[in-house]
Image 1 (cartoon, helix red, strand yellow):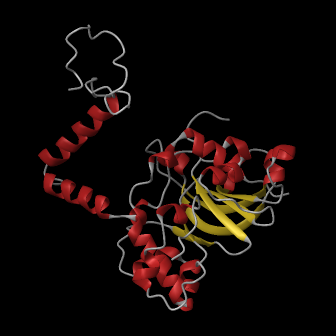
Image 2 (cartoon, chains in turn green, blue; image 1 turned 90 degrees about the horizontal axis):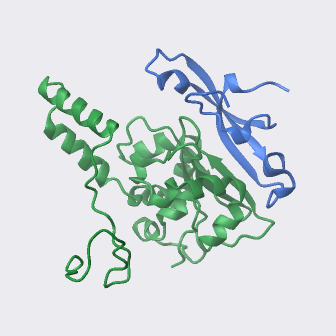
Image 3 (tube, helix red, strand yellow; image 1 turned 45 degrees about the horizontal axis):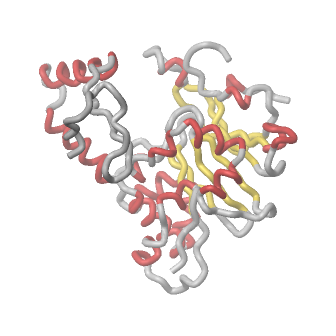
Length: 218
Length: 77
């Protein structure tokens, strides 16, 4: 039991858990100003009949249901259908809606990786991410380290993700500073000729659509 | 940097780039952030070389960075 420590007091560091991880403090601290503000506004909206608790819960479920699988389906369609790929690169939002994805007001730009170009997405100012298509971003995407290093030393960052690119590959970093969100159309891996869209989609990882990874090979 | 909500990152200030594509007009986030009536401002994707941004410290001078910048932060050269 993590808290079964009869022989010492609780006013010092608890060290490591039996599994070797540091204990994480319970979040017992008081609500912040903005947490209280959010709860107050939410309760007022419900009390005044502007929105129901069920509608809020439903919207949370809609967001939680969004996942990288949506983007992977878009990528697989673009690999399979040259006309769709052209529409995706011209207007990625419209192309995603055409596939039936409800992405709300998302302004989406798709950028294509090729033999000679590799794209990488970052938001240096905050955590802009195509959530309405891919769901929530990974935690590292929001860290100060990723946000600052991706623009200054993208090749070093990519190496740490296991992506080693030759100097001859042009790296294009996209800083999502305003109203656009980005998805990368990864290069289609070799050995995938004739594969069906659902099988292709399984090769498309979240990181491949951020640019910190490549599509898997079958 | 000026105080307040500014969506032109400090590391791009004073740097030279080229318009990659115009994006249309969007409500100015620097007014939206304060609940003000926001004018629609033209937004552009601007492409910079890593050499322009980081000088000799650039990993590869010809790699590029694209950012979205509002018209009022740009100056024609």
